[in-house]
Amino acid sequence: MKTSIHLENKITSKPSRYGLKYHIKTFGCQMNEHDSEKIAGMFQKDGMIKSNEIDNSDVLFINTCTIRENADDKLYGTLGQLKKWKDENPNRKLLVGGCAAQKDKYLVRERAPWVDVVLGTHNTNDIINLLNQSEDWGPVTEILEETTNIESETSPVRESSINAFVTIQIGCNNSCTFCIVPSVRGVEISRRPSDIVNEIERLSHEGVKEITLLGQNVNSYGRDLMINNKRRPYFTELLYKIHDIEGIERIRFTSPHPKDFKEETLIAVSELPKVVNQIHIPLQSGSNKILSAMHRGYNQKRFIEKIDMIKSIITDASISTDIIVGFPGESHIDFEETMKVVNYAEFDLIYMFKFSPRPGTVASDYQDKFVKKDIIDDRFMSLKNRQTEISEFRYARFVGSTQKMLIEKPSKKDERILTGRIEGGHIVNLESNKYGIGDLVNVKIVDSTPFFLKATA
Ligand code: SF4
Image (cartoon, rainbow, N blue to C red):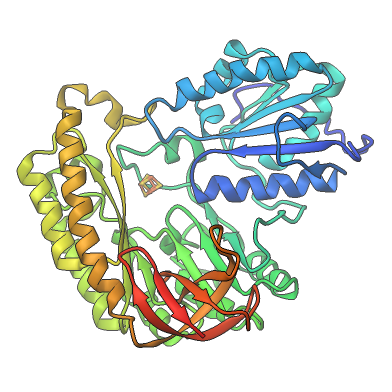
């Protein structure tokens, strides 16, 4: 169902904006980053050239996110500042899309009428058409309630020539109370396996060595498709298919949901050498009370069983997680339950977040249970300090071993140092002049910190 202007007449033969400069400002997650890569592809197909600066650009796309409590203030603050940018040259075009635009719908237009195009998360593939419409008829807002076309006709412009994100699924059928995704990205929609495989084959021909399969809940991939006359999760089979693609050396995936992790997927990870032994399994909290308030669909015992299953099936698995500290109602005892799981699982890496109410989520209404900021800060520091100790010995286990490293780029601080990652996802700094970007090489790990490894060739 559409809630705004329905544009029946799609203009596709409009002369392109050949030679104009575009800039994309992206907030938020990997999904948004990849959407921006796709939009860059559409802009370039339209003849535009990438600009690294807003001031120097003719077309500016703001890809918004709702992840933080004050994201709305920041968005409208940014749009306020951009009025000057528009006023300096009325021919400039300002476009706003992403999760905040999807959530706020007409509010963006009301609060920033100088924006030329407001579009949602379900119609990013239509961005050039909407830009054309705005040139013909003035500012346009089009927010759809569901995705009608998941496939883009244009190849994304990727930030790296070595690694590429590949979306396998959009949306989410879960209802975690801290998360805005289900309301702004809709229900799960899986891409067809053949479309995914074709895209990865094309990437392989272009020289990409490592792909990351992206979705909000990758391990439920395919349960909305009818494959071989059945509706069921098809993620494991997809891994086997992708593994056969020549030229692709590494396959990563993110994010799986703990409740949907199946033994067969972990067996595939252990059997398929190109699928890395890095497993990201988001815990969020170790307390049963908080997990239930979050609507996560598992408890501490089930989560620990998944950790045991991962460790028993995958040799030397590198396990990472997400934890939210200070979810409404979290007591000291609840936090200790989280620490219990952290100490048991010995994650290689934790992405830690302090709870902040995200507008539009269920948890943002739990004001009476909000935890005080100084308590959240203290708990966050305790978690950070403990994880640094754990990461220290988890990273140190590699010292003296030989690991396969994919070289990604020169270090920002020192051009003589090459950085990349080993299979487990750990960052490695390599001092060598023998190798170049994109090489997959055996390196000797000579030192470690809790955050990265050092290697020689
Ligand atoms: S699983 Fe939960 S946290 Fe992840 S996208 Fe879905 S609702 Fe959000």
